[in-house]
Amino acid sequence: MKFVMFYHSLASCWNHGNAHFLRGIARELLGLGHQVTVYEPRDGWSRLNAIQNGGSEYLREAALLVPGAVLRSYDLATLDLDEALDQADLVIAHEWNDPILIEWLGAKRRGGGRFILLFHDTHHRAITAPHQIGRFQLGDYDAVLAFGEVLRQVYERLGWGRRAFTWHEAADVALFRPRPYTTKEFDLIWIGNWGDDERDRELQEFLVGPVVETGLRTQAFGVRYPKPARDRLQAAGIDFHGWLPNHRVPDAFARARTTVHVPRRPYVEALPGIPTIRMFEALACAIPLVSAPWDDAEGLFPPGSFVPVKNGQTAAAALRKLVQDGEFAAEIASRGLDTIRARHTCAHRAHELLAIARALGIKGNQTRSDAGPVAERMVSS
Image 1 (cartoon, helix red, strand yellow):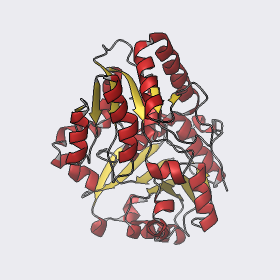
Image 2 (tube, rainbow, N blue to C red):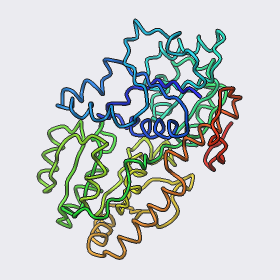
Image 3 (cartoon, one colour):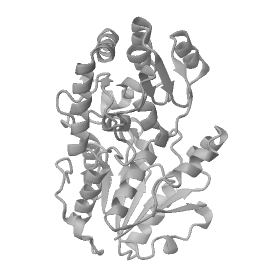
Image 4 (cartoon, rainbow, N blue to C red):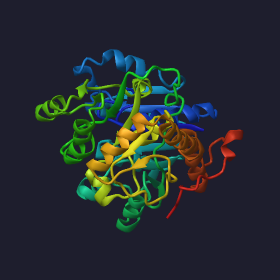
């Protein structure tokens, strides 16, 4: 089949975690014998910020991460949709697109487009800023892909789109895999963006405070850290390095003994069951993980896959134990890795996507590998 995808960016991951998952899905679809073309806006904010951060080299590296994928940059004013959609079997538009593009794609489908059209939502705006999602015209879309069951139910309840499916993120295990022979250079690593005061208190409690209490050698990476936040990290003895392109994250994980997962507040309070993609990626690298509170409402991770903590004090104790007790750390890392390999790789999600396409009546040519089982977490309305 021919997949045509409209996303904010494939090449740039600057403050843009969707690129992580998109790369993995594109890689798996190509491996199954499908064609993949990704359209991204030429003036996208992620790409422009990456360049401003001196990331031109990183963008060139990232553009080569998924051999065989066709990457097209476009200007909305001159985009030729007839050419872009020619012979497409399945078209996916992500929610970080311009509402005009979403409308145009729907019009093409309504006007006789012989493709399945899907809208992909991987954010909390449907609950925290419903007016932003409500402006998208989804009546002509065949279905919505929501990255958590609670989000799928929001679309169903509000009548946005004809049908909605749960389609979680996952780890791109071609990149995120264990590197057991790498020398450990520090104790704790944190990789994540500060981001609009959505987890500033949580980072203080579950990262900064425990580091001060334990004295663990810690490195942190991310973007959009205001100066007061950087000063706070420095005062805690945390080495802050700024943006780390995602394809270089596995090497960084391999040099650390443990990591922490600190979800953003909107997900904890309004969208239970949805972890950050960093959790999937960290476990895929077999680094033992300590997680701040979140509700695993869908049972994505069996007990023992990571260490849940309730507050900063228990976080400090868990981090200290993982650093000092190698046997305990190895057990947690092994269980986390087994969970990813069994349930949460981009290969699993690619087969789920193909199953959704079949449920929607896809007519495109299928490969012999398309008949994989439908994953447990794929739920339709």
